[in-house]
Length: 74
Image (cartoon, rainbow, N blue to C red; front, side, top):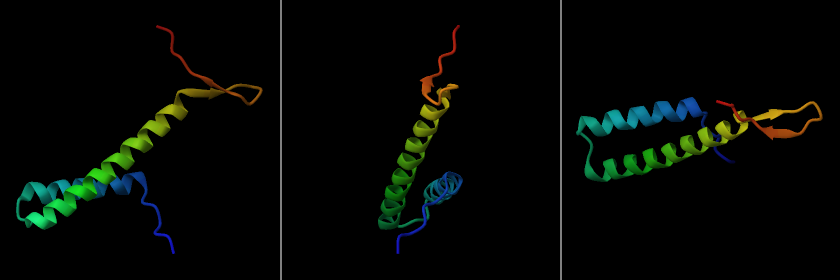
């Protein structure tokens, strides 16, 4: 059975928890390496999700159902 995907907000909370634990300095070296590895994986997943959402937001749906790049004119 595949593990349920964590929500973006849950990943951010987990990242914050790991950072706090690492900053505390009371983690063994092996544990710190595991936590750092997990944090880097979560950070990449969050970054990828933000990029995906950003790409979607930068497009608008036209009346005929086609997606078009959304450009703000300055």
